[in-house]
View 1: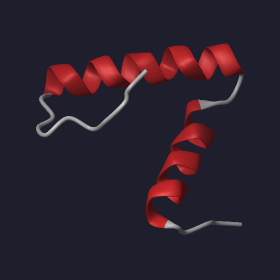
View 2 (view 1 turned 120 degrees about the vertical axis):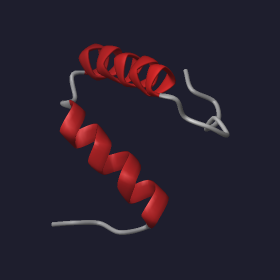
View 3 (view 1 turned 90 degrees about the vertical axis):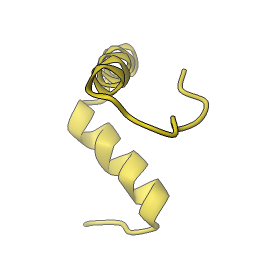
View 4 (view 1 turned 120 degrees about the horizontal axis):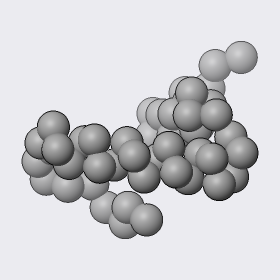
Length: 49
């Protein structure tokens, strides 16, 4: 689980986070694109229909 955002984001760290997100996506059965939209909406407060 990613508890907080890192201060800097190297390419290696980004890929590690992406791999963990893909694993989580598979575990919960939600496509990565949908998860990305959920997390983006949560951060921005915007919701697309």
